[in-house]
Length: 326
Image (cartoon, rainbow, N blue to C red; front, side, top):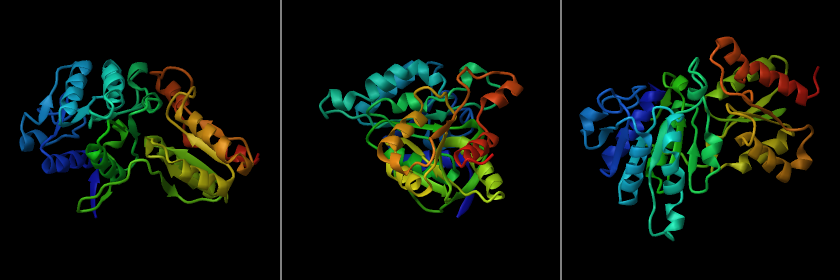
């Protein structure tokens, strides 16, 4: 096993797939000459050339549309958004073309394309640069939505996304790019649509995804000192969602918390809550709790931002409430 950074795992996944398949190319703002805004495409221009690593204008709708059309004609594009906040400029191409073309063409056309880039808050970036839209894209039939939290998962899932014949939304985090983790020497691919139990526990199930999982681990360590066992499920793929792993865990622990870095209304947590109450209601010993950001735009003030963002203390408090511990 090797230890590499998250950004290197992203770069390796893209490069390995580009070596295997000359139909794969990368396009986005600053991906070529600048090696990527977060250096996730470092060295790729030198290896693959300007026809396959393409610097785009600051025009998300334009380069998303070009890439969708290219995918429909036989290529396999990787589209990097400098942040998924900017993807809103190109969301018409993602939802009305990429996600729907297979159904609208009666299966005659498909769109094997990956839209990737950072999601969520990353410090004092303000209300328009700190948003999480996983639930927006997951609400769209025809899209697959992946949000990895570890270096190993990021590489294996991105390779799977690039090979997939349907459009995939692949959401990363600026605050994970420098994280280090182990990856195998050889080729490996992880299945899309399978959650991972990152920590086995017996008292409460916690479901989460993306970088906010770090707060879950901090909470688990605190709770363990008090004799409370927290099971942590990393969803990894928001759509298709692995309901079976969640339900099996809830039937064991009888309690559920969903931790999500997003607004509460119509969230991924809302969908999980519905599925569990429908299929495992009789196993619940307490109401389901969800922990999300505050229902406001992200503040700029660091003091307010700390209050706005879910943290380990919120998890500890919620666990004790579910277990009726004062």
